[in-house]
Length: 114
Image 1 (spheres, rainbow, N blue to C red):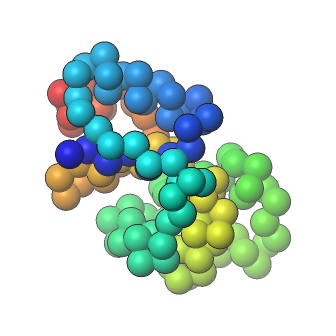
Image 2: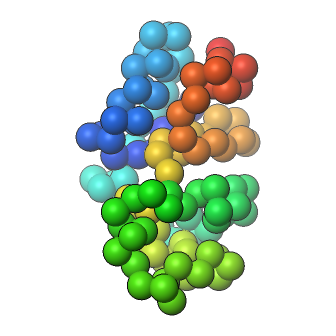
């Protein structure tokens, strides 16, 4: 089962879910505001996805961090920040089998999931 992590009012997440439905791909959606992330979970993401790719540096949440909080080299600090502020990770984060991707790109997903 494909797992999609995101926020239900995020436009990119909406596009991704619509694409999955149009391609008849079953998925399980998790709104991370309703079902919070655990530190262990985010650390497992960081083991597969570099922090530079996982963190959304365009987000309002990122811009509101002070300079000392923007150090992406400390995975423990990054995972704690994402747990506290789930809007910091690029959405959607999709898990399929043992692979993960962040963001939505229809062409990449076509090759990956369809």
